[in-house]
Picture 1 (cartoon, helix red, strand yellow):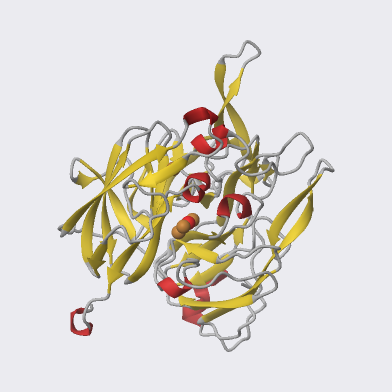
Picture 2 (cartoon, protein in one colour):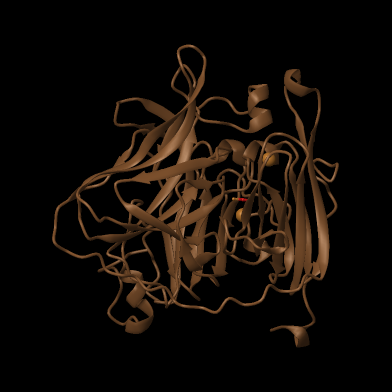
Length: 464
Ligand code: C2O
Ligand code: CU
Ligand code: CU
């Protein structure tokens, strides 16, 4: 998307106003379509030798020659057309994670045939929700996503508050082997058990911290974060600035909230309001476990974004969020229990199997529900590893004792189900079609924890 200067003069002023806010951090797509209501871009997946700042060269995959892939930017209601070409040596598809497209555009290899090497496919959909989303392949994704195939998406709503600056950070980790290559997938029992945990943090395509130019005190920014790691739940903290959580998977929250540490599971997004009050050093850090010399596990904070705040007399602007009434929870018309467990020979088997209701990659849909239903989904985790569970095509709210969660409010498409715990959500199945549901630990998904569910279209006269 060309953010300024690239659009012809004829564009409708009011409807394009908001798109001129620049999102920093990731180079955007070039929008080839002059129509202000259409975003039309080209996307190419191909192998690439990535040269990092320290001189090392790592063979990876990239979208349009960059990691992360270009920022896709649209406003609510826009039609998005993506001409995709696969130049990998293996089939792939693109999934628009969190964007409520139709099932035929969702990148499910069960519905639309995979795009073979050398082939192209045009994705075409309308964006119906404002928020922070992302795109990534949905085939062999434990390898393809790890190799660098993912990119951010911003959909703006007309009532989006304005910030001094917006930034997008793709938060990831990367597992490099002793030869400095991306390690082969699923080579260790550990990886099939807990998913692939990288030995390098990898933020906006950098192996070291992203260093932002100095920021003047008084600036207020919107930071959009996605966890693009195969498996690692990112535990984030911010020092030197104040922040509030203002949005998540399904867009802006009804009310911002504060946390000390932000736990962001694979696939999830968080939008932060960051206020730079005081001059000094600012760091967004990821807390990681390392082993001491004596083998003791220790938590350290590794900076992934850093900047300096310079003094100024400017007072931070006060952002007002669109006040909205909290609607009653919709009444659930059904309850579905999803038992999550594993099978196989334990730590010495090379591959565990991960199951949903006793099956790996079940053929038959897990459940079928009419469009417009609210359904209580119970994720019952029988094992110690956690499962960030993801539903395609819809949003849900996390429940605590039958009520809306106050710790994790807002519309979600991915929920972290901790080890040996049960988590309940209320899913709004408003988007008809055949949809995937799976663990977003991409190794677990690859090893069986991926299924389908069906939302039957309502009769035309019952449609909203
Ligand atoms: Cu981000 Cu089906 O995944
Ligand atoms: Cu998804
Ligand atoms: Cu899992």
